[in-house]
Image 1 (cartoon, one colour):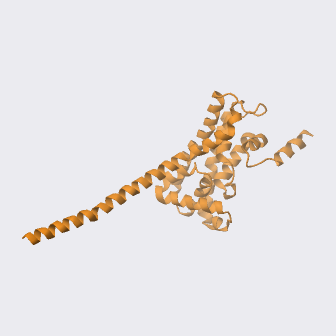
Image 2 (cartoon, one colour):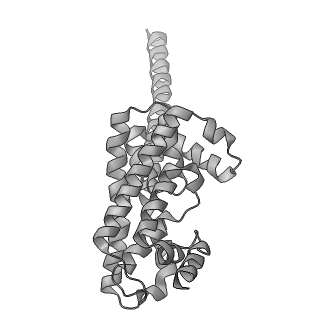
Image 3 (cartoon, rainbow, N blue to C red):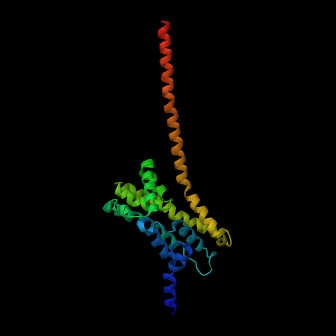
Length: 243
């Protein structure tokens, strides 16, 4: 009877709700979601940021008395799922090319592909691969896109590991630290998760600001040159007239 109840609870899980996923599958669910969100295009809708943060919070036992996760096991599952998923997505991109994206009818997924390609073009491989980890949907699409565009295997592997570890372990430990320091923090979980998502977008926003500022500086310096040349031409004519 208990087995039937547990099975029914798992089948009724809400994949868009972090608590529901964790209650049904625990640490194993974190690893599976990380793999699906970063390695399979079908997982672009999964709640990666909120899942990592909530899972870290539940490791303290302060949010839900009936559910407490093991922090070491959670860190391993999150890291392995995120790294293996990204590498799998890259390999799929190398083999399948753009066919997977072309077949998709999701406007959100195609928009994420455009953002991912812009990241690669604007910031280069290293920065784009790291920054993409912190942007929902983009972190799903960039991995196969990198494979499709022929990003070198060593370059992709190095920087996806760096970005994957910072993202997965950072958000998990942030949830654990907050749950350990603030009692009854689960009452404020929704606004905290929203804040975490905003904070995770700050690196990308900072890079966009720097690139735009750099572009404006180059335009300003470029527009100053014709003025100087015009001025020098006028002075040359006046000298000729005087002579």
